[in-house]
Amino acid sequence: EVQLVESGGGLVQPGRSLRLSCAASGFTFDDYAMHWVRQAPGKGLEWVSGISWNSGSIGYADSVKGRFTISRDNAKNSLYLQMNSLRAEDTALYYCAKDIRTGGNSFGAFDIWGQGTMVTVSS
Amino acid sequence: EIVLTQSPGTLSLSPGERATLSCRASQSVSSSYLAWYQQKPGQAPRLLIYGASSRATGIPDRFSGSGSGTDFTLTISRLEPEDFAVYYCQQYGSSVTFGPGTKVDIK
Image 1 (spheres, rainbow over the protein chains, first blue to last red):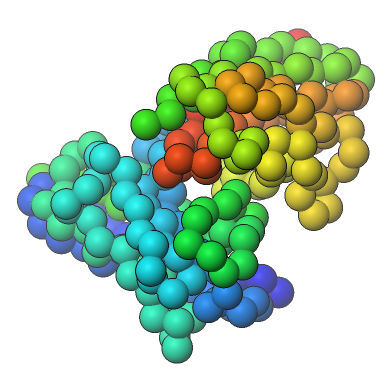
Image 2: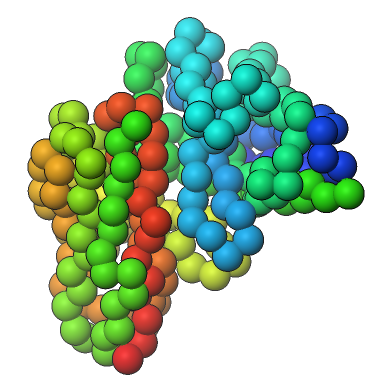
């Protein structure tokens, strides 16, 4: 079964850091780009960041550029999001999502999603 | 950044009716790199359509996508009870952005 399981969320004070993880199973992880998408409570979807299969192409939303860093470990079938200088507006459910395309350095649609991990930034 | 606008914000229909959802981009979406997702309360989004008109695996044929350039449409030919949800469009031709969503609720 194809599965993505996020972890690492929690309550954190403004200005602090948090690292999210996403464990992938049921597919050849290193064939696909991966993404983080977030959803603030009661709001819509916001793409946060994406990384190609070989980490050769990385993109960020303007709202997180310079504060968040995406990475992956293909040997561990894992995706990560290092979040620094957290703000109240970063409060959201963070989803890990698999890209539909194999290989290449551009992004496609997202065909598999995890259930998300909640990040709350508050003092 | 390509900004996506979805209309209407809310669509109130009855089961069996046809739903037509619109997604408009602030600039042309290259190669029709446009997708549609369905999200129900408490669930992760589900991919319905990619490449503007290709149905994802397991998606019923009552869902169809069309359009190119800056104007795209998701059509649900006959609404089933399980289709009442929020629908998002997404472009992935120039970075990635999502539209604000259209809620389809029961009239």
